Length: 195
Length: 81
Image (cartoon, rainbow over all chains, first blue to last red; front, side, top):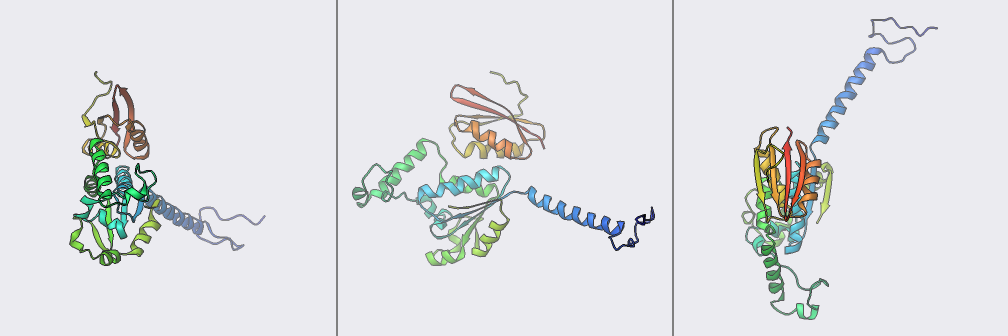
């Protein structure tokens, strides 16, 4: 048997070319360090939402999920693009509309729902229900989420496309970002949603 | 009705609906010290499941118990870290 290695001297490579004890110890240290890194990164949960819709009903899901995830301790980013920008728009967010056409669950036929003033009426009905049920308003949810540290991003390309100004948005909204920023957030996130 | 827990603070979210009971509970817990128990009083029937889910998914909190008292739902949450 020629496998005996000198005890207490782990620095020499063994005669058959196998890694020495010191090399193995260094390799173990290296693996433990990278494992610690991976575990530490996993501790901070992240969620990334892309919000593309600006009707009153579709403004709720991203904000409810964002504030709830923040309550769970998640780091949350919501990237708003196209009509989703209206949720972050200080003026427009207070006047989000509900469409009375195109939704077969509405209690009025599309032929009547398409008449002038119908969107205003269905929006008022929904706003009354929101108030009666003490459901949070869009503005409340947005302010609450901002307070909780949710990062709201306004897509630069669609800000320009819609003719909005960067000052039109709530304080704290991040502008000057694009798809690559959103993609990087999605890569790092535990949960990714397109709303 | 007195509670079996030593309550540091009571949060009244009666009337508020999803997601506010959970969101406000998180805010109230952040203000407390380690070991303190928060009582959450809600009328949202969804809060029974939601507070339970929040407490199991959130580090640093423990749901001690939940009670249904007529139209009112009471939740007892301890801050553990």
